[in-house]
Image (cartoon, rainbow, N blue to C red):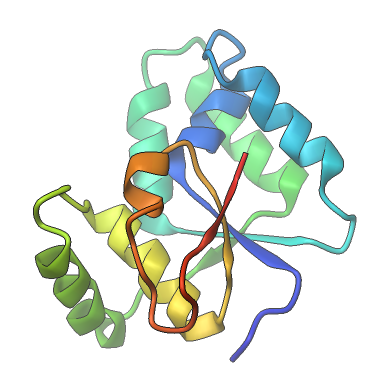
Length: 141
């Protein structure tokens, strides 16, 4: 089902928003402040797993991750067995980058929901990925 006014959120911005010492913290905060109020922010559990791991060494990083999820009303889209064939296909197609599991899940969810925008710091990957529903994904910041 198409998700109007929705943006998928990758690991990088989550970590950068939580950790003010990250080099992209200000850029990611600026994106949040400029988004229209009606924008739905979506992510997936593999993204949160990565973020939690990366924030485990940051003082109160994991607690602040939960606070961020609440503050942004970040919706966690379930990844089901039905997604796995597409995720595997994407990871095989982009094995030379390589495409990790979380990125493949986000692209599969973008295709399923017809989402065209991703909030990511992984430009190298997301500029190359070509989802089936659009020529390319718009990348924030």
